Image 1 (cartoon, rainbow, N blue to C red):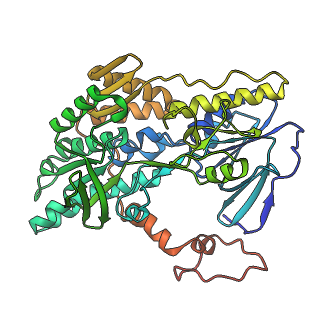
Image 2: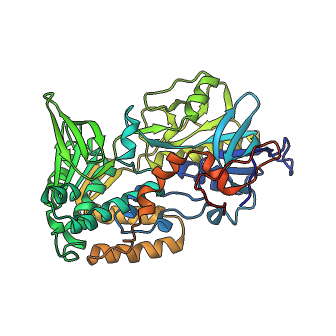
Length: 475
């Protein structure tokens, strides 16, 4: 690939003369909005930070070796290949200019400006460390494929290193896994690490006993799965205990380093947990684009950086700008996939109505399809309206719903096969773990942004030639 740092304009007019709809983000909100515009007389440009659509609710299964990354992250271009009015562009959006109606994106030093007539911002959210971003070096989150692969390397690598260790204290540190955050992601992650240790790896080692691994689920809150209510939260906590997960509530993490973490109890005392593998599943922070939109439109921001939108999901004073998913704040709606999907479809419908000269529709109304979380093999909890399920029935509901929303027939088939291997048997289909997975993110951050351009070329005459930061010839 050859790139240049020069600005590239997408043009001021649509080649077809049709309204230009720019969608920021290839997650649930952005993708479903694009698909809803399939037959509309518009030109759609979907800008994605990655080249894939991520089924984020199943990332923990990538991290624990059940699924491959391809099964939860199909290529966005492949999904939209039959949609003739849609164009997919790779790039990270760095600026949105509401006054001039442009979106600026960049990738590997190449900057592109995209004019729009209608804009849907669905850039999602990242992990929040509550002001302690330094924790990320030692406790990765669960928001991207890179995160999941890094965690897979850390989890499986911890057992491998424990097999080589001779000091019992070091073995204990390597075989202690701490998950911070007792929401659905944290509960599912802790449960699968327990299943991994007690079932999959039970007979694979000679010097260590994986079933003695210590799995700790930490949260400063007083209960597990607080959004599910006390009854299901208590059942989830008991089931976690039954499969070997230590649930520690009312415990706030105050420091994280390479060897473990410090925890402050509700009575103010601080204790130390030595653990090689730490996983952060507590809190989210909306995309920084939210702050830019708020500053330009006068909209308010909440503590998580989400933009307060109008009842029709638009910005105040900007009916052409729609904000959906984890970036929007409206009626205390949760940051779940269904909110993004329904918001994306609603915004697409609003755009079609505006183009057709029809009056605006009713305000956005979220239809809550319920919440669910798996705890272990054949056991889950589900909160669906007035009905609350647990155990095997909830697990079957969870299974069917997630299969339904996985994009692509091929992905559904391979997912079922891998689930059969993991849930009916003891195996894991995806146990490859490399040093590159574990340390690649940290190495790239250390080298800095200039490294990317030094390896991809595309320099202009005005740009001084940079030294290759690896000391090798560029590929």
